[in-house]
Image (cartoon, rainbow, N blue to C red; front, side):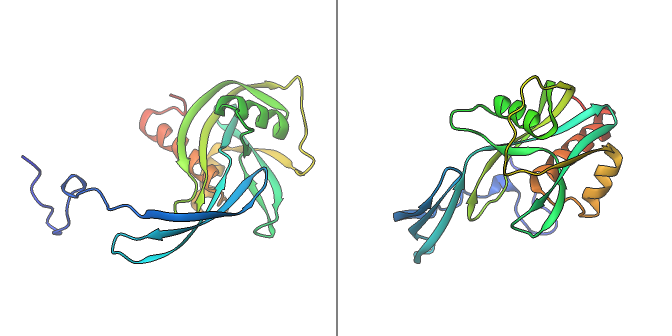
Amino acid sequence: MGRSPHPSGLPWPEDLPPPDPIVRLSGRQVYRNAWISVREDVVRFPHGHEGIYSVVTTNACVGMLPFVDDDHVVLVRQWRYVTGEPRWEMPTGGNRPGEEPLEAAQRELAEEIGRVAGRLEHLATIDSSKSVVAERATLFAARDLRPATAVELDVTEHLQLAVFPFEDVVAMVRRSEIVDAMTVVAVLQVALRVATTGRGST
């Protein structure tokens, strides 16, 4: 027997049928490079209307929240061309073709902060956008950092890095001073673990 209805009159999730899909009728690739592809599809929506749906697909990506000790993390700051302003974020980057998330995470850590992790703890796997952009991100807490032996710098990145108390980073997220979706999710995941278990690692 199911649960009694909620006093609001709204249904519980298990009481709902699966949503009807949007059906792709045809499509064409508009643009592609090594990082993204842009596709324009003709689709039929559940109510029968037909229209255009544009989809931007990116490579899978990773984000790492690097802990130098239990209470301090490294953030990087760079000029973000799309928004036209500098942003504090955790190290992030796209996976290379055929690269697994753990491998990509260590490479990006070496490139961005000159260190690799003795431990990478999976925090979450997310879709950073849900409507137009298809980008799957795997997020980690990076611990037991040590200097990277080989660093291949990305000439497109000009990074500053600094150590922050983790509690200050949580406050920056709460004040919307950090707005990068991957960083926000990673920080809140760790903060939730601290709040529920008393420690940041699993």
